[in-house]
Length: 220
Image 1 (tube, helix red, strand yellow):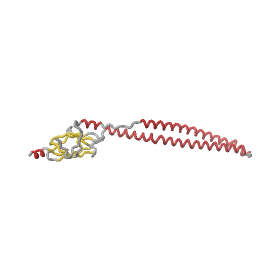
Image 2 (cartoon, one colour):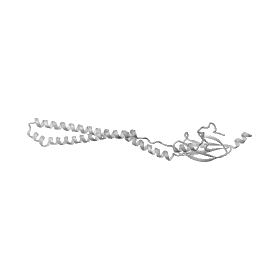
Image 3 (cartoon, rainbow, N blue to C red):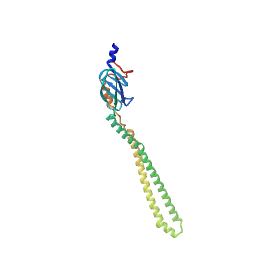
Image 4 (cartoon, rainbow, N blue to C red):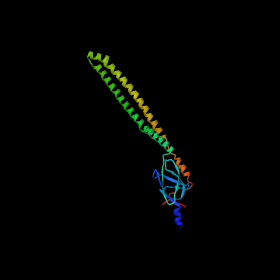
């Protein structure tokens, strides 16, 4: 008779909560559970659902004696997590730029400087060759052409090439300093940290120690 009376005064809840595997819930502010099926005394019971990075969900469920009732809950991401995710994504994008972008700029600047220096060296060789030709040539027309046109043009080309080499070398030095400074800043930057306030709130809603109940999750 005692067993029959107990069976008539209890019912079951089948818990279907998303995300599956990481969610837990507090029953009547007393026990934190992860069981997917529990047995409770008939009557109303308060359930508070929680999962990492998700918003808490409070609901009151009526347990019917001798019946099994499904309780479905879908937990949405918390505002704190959405904000954290946006900050983390922005941090990662900036970090990738600091890690790869500035060195690539420096590499490009280095290539520009190398080409400019080679061009200046070639212009110097061309001018030296024309001056040697002017010194050794015995052709009057050729000498006039060298003096009036070819040597002045070579001098002008050398001035331009030298100017470009100086500018590109200066930019290379600046970019190298920028890479060093950016990498220094990158090492000192702190990644955003997610503070799960919903977890603190859910833990505070349960005065008992956290536990998992085996079987049907029945307690006295």
